[in-house]
Length: 119
Length: 325
Image (cartoon, rainbow over all chains, first blue to last red; front, top):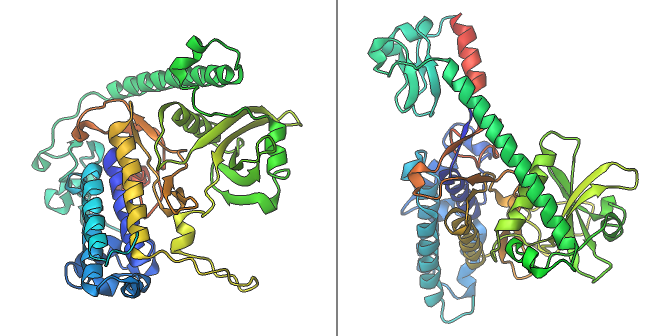
């Protein structure tokens, strides 16, 4: 008996990494010890309460020319991708090619709305 | 103590379900979502098990094939390094082995000198398979990270071979660039294996997300990543995975992606590194068929490894078995 190795496993790890980048919290953080988990923590905040779970550092972007609406939109898109990638059942997870496309779209939308500031 | 109910659903388990103990009562046991389970009482509606001797022989076969492939890979690797070192060798021999890549010749002495005798001051990281030292190659002044494998630890030599195999098959802007590899002996005659990487001066994503605050040092400038920088890193890492999963000649699974394995260069471009646990998948077809059984006991890191990929099942099985009996 061995462990299953598949590309789905990498996508799960990637989703977890994405959620960690948004929240600043590790999946092993003590606040998730009651079983809720990083995935559900963010999933429950979608779509309207993302700002409450996001790392406060990220909200400072307002000073750099982005509107709070754009930040919210961007954070929501990234969080959604993170949640879809870290679903419990492998087949419910996103394909990594779609992740690249979706995040590039999110980036283009965000930069477009940032009053022409460079990346 | 009596076990009253047992929920084993969706664990991707395999093997024969016992007939006694809690398994006598179908309403107390849930085994749905484990398509490879067999046997058990009729109410569980599982398929009947095939004979037990078969898996053993297939395990032997798989082991044999794995060892042969490992040996072939060892020979390939050795000849690759040998060919790379002989610059005079005719081009026709080397063209198939991607020797046009700027792999450098390094000797043990070069690495020792670069890392200041593998000094503690040059140590920038340590993991289960090896320690990483920063240094400057005296030959050309290139700043490098040298990973020295802990050969006394189980699996370290295999990690070296796995990482070396990546030399042959991968190149992408979001993967850590390998400059050279060394397999030989140190001055005492002990086995010594090391891989030389381009140094990522901004360290790992882990250090940026969770900076360690030291009270005895003056505080360096705060390392924070704004939203767009994080988004860029997210795209970089996804692009690297997309390359490994979909664009390589042989499909590759990293198996241990986490912030400490995402390294940032001077422009904060992310490079995925540390391929000690990667797996080559043999069937380059649709995702549905992309799974194979590995003989590695523990794969990945708790928190980042998908449910069901870290093998603790065997222990749980023995605990349950003891409880029942």
